[in-house]
Length: 354
Image (tube, rainbow, N blue to C red; front, side):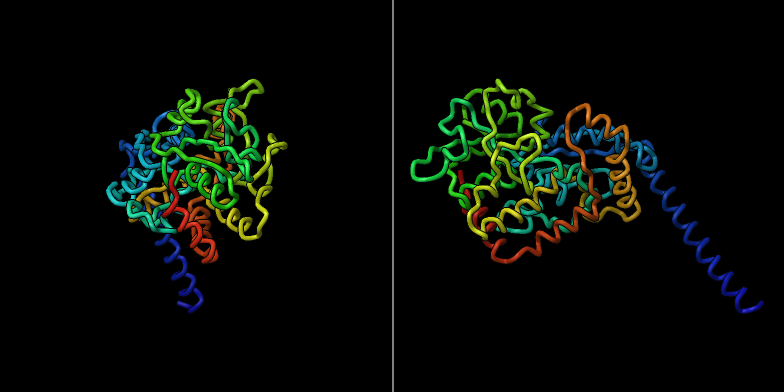
């Protein structure tokens, strides 16, 4: 046989073998998932923003996974979703039948260290992606209309008044951003942590147990749209977690507006990068490679599907999905942030109390 024909035959055989192996792998994945159930753990209780996104993903994800398994939601609140993260990393089965969504700040918590209860390395998760990258969102700080702080300027300076904010715990946006803004910008804030979930904080504000809270705009639109009405009992006093002012809130100042020093602006940039992981989803480390690829591809397909987008629009929640590879790349960028900034954030988290 001529050498060129032999080479062509070898290449054809290699391609055919690879295609067969790929098809066999896909069939194995379909056989595994057919008739099975995937548990999607939500690190908060029912009714909050993460629960809303988690249930939306659960309704669509299964039809994009080979074998079309049923996806069911299990709420696992505790410590700002740290309980769920630790469970996913250390205890959940690693066969591709358990995934989770949890606070966007959890990867930063794992990178910084200093919390003995954080028993995970965010770079080792099997990242599926994020349903939102906060490109069109913002984190808002609300204050009751009977609170001593009615503008953010009321909480800074020699005659500053205190604003009491409700939060879940370390690693959650409402807690960690409040500590950062208090220490970095001199805002007079007191954080009352320990609420089990977002819904609990909503009720605490409405009952007057605390004077305000922080959470993202899309979650408010979905869970408490009345908070954004002109006659609401609360008002937005500050926005952060994005480069500029949200298009719907042009008169509300940002954290950057208050940052007078270059170090403060650089630190806010790092915190904003963490916020771009707005609604992260992951599986445990060690999921078999073919199943990991299947659920990662399914997450991307589901969150970019027209039916998914239409339901998200109806629910008034922001969708700007990114892949698991992009989530991991952003986590690596966080880990590579300047040492002085990471050290400052680490000290805040270790010393930060209400």
